[in-house]
Amino acid sequence: MTTSDATEKKPLWLLIEDRIQGIDLQDLSEANLETSIQKMAGELDGEGYNVSLHGGNLIQLRHAVAKARKVGKPMMRDFNAAISALTLEDVDDPYKATNSILEDLSDTWPELKLSDRRPDVIEIVEQTKLDLLIAKAKGLEGDAGIRLLIEESVDFSVITESMEITDEKVNEVDELIKQERAERARVAGLLEKVADKSNEEKVRHLFDNNVSEELIIEMAGVDQGVLDAVKKAMEEEIKEKQRLAEEEAARKKKEAEGPSLEDIPSDQMIDYIDSIREIMEFSEEEKEIRVMCEQSAIPKALVDIAVSDPDKLDELEKQAEG
Image (cartoon, rainbow, N blue to C red; front, side, top):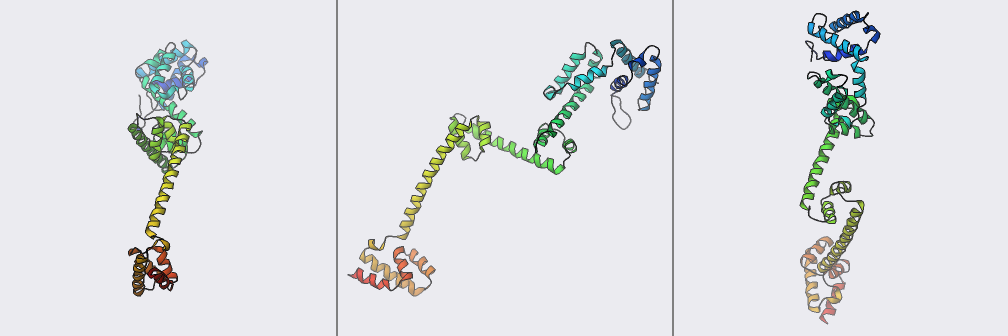
């Protein structure tokens, strides 16, 4: 590829074809041929390409002009038409797309298959792919377009410029994508552990490990019906576990509170009342009394009377003594 001292430019063969496309073919008639060639050579000289005084470059120009005259149209007409017809699906593999274009045009333009031109055609196809990706990205809602370009490994500087967004925005979306990829890797690992299980067991395993429903459907390969069935079964289990837990909590509470007044044997009633009186001599604060009574395993029913109506303790004591 011909370059200037400072900046890489279009390859000479491509610039020559562009020049030929830009002139009227009548200017390439026998009468005007030499004048047109010299004019194009001078224009190329002015752009930093030595054509007029470089034998090889001038021959390249003459050959390109001769071929356009023979075919009756410039090469770029067919080439640009082939490029314009490309879709994103076509350019998914730029090398394959390049081979297809060169093969389609080679009968008329075999020069395109020259080894020094193929890299230039690949570069044009890759740029076409980028242009198509950007066009698609701009038509997507929200951050979907930015995601598309990041996932297609488009340079961040190109994304910010083409989508007219900040570096911070690109980095934000990129971080979300990284987190999603990490989550997918985690889910894949979870699925490996239950690879031999039924779909229902897989779904349950993923639910237990806080995987989103959307990701379960996608990665476990199940439909919404399986998800709903598992969720319903798990909800019933949760309700049953909650019921049992409430019953156990009530049992422990009752056990901690001790027996009701009617269930306290007379001899124990007297002992409890003696203990309460000792505690009440130590403190008059209800909270402290309750704490010390609880530490002494005194039934709550008796403690409630002690803090609300302590005179009733005498009555209970007489009843216990018979």
